[in-house]
Structure formats: structure tokens, C-alpha cells
Length: 108
Image (cartoon, rainbow, N blue to C red; front, side, top):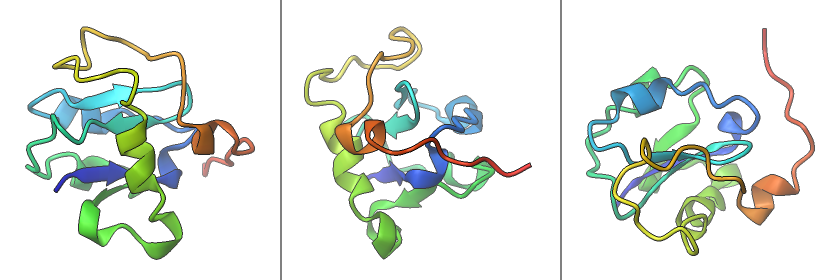
């Protein structure tokens, strides 16, 4: 089991979750952040600090965003498991579902 980042993160990328993650498993794509399913230790530290409630435990992802489980998993198909996001930096891509989205409005 793992945590999942969903639609509210797209075009926001607040990064508060990155600061809280003790294992550095939250990677940055061009338009959103992704949790590496093999590196996440299910501690839950990221979930309460997300200002837009984009992070969910795998079994708790709202139905309208259930595809984001695969989005987070598939994002790493060609990235592998680098063993820490900090040394990788921004990965210049997004999952196709995210890349195809129109720009997301951000609340003020």
C-alpha cells in the first residue's frame, strides 16, 4: 500500500509534502508531484500538510480520482527507483493523463 497524489496537485505543486517526507519519495514532474510506490513507507506525514488535500492513502482516493493511483505508479515506469527525489530534481515529464489536462485553476 502507498499514498497517492491526485488532481488537486496539478499546476500547484505546493511542495509542503516534500519537506515532511522522511524517505524523500515524492518526486516532481512538470505539472504535479508523484509519490514513488516502492519508496513510500506509508508513514502518512505528507497527507496532513497538503494545503489542497491532494494526498490520499491508496484505499481512500475519491472515486473521481481513482485513476491517480495508476498515474503515480506508471510515472516511474521509465524512471525506475532512484532512491530519493532530492538528487534527481524535476523530472521533465508528466504522466500522459496529467499532461493532457487543461491548465488547472488555482484558488486564491
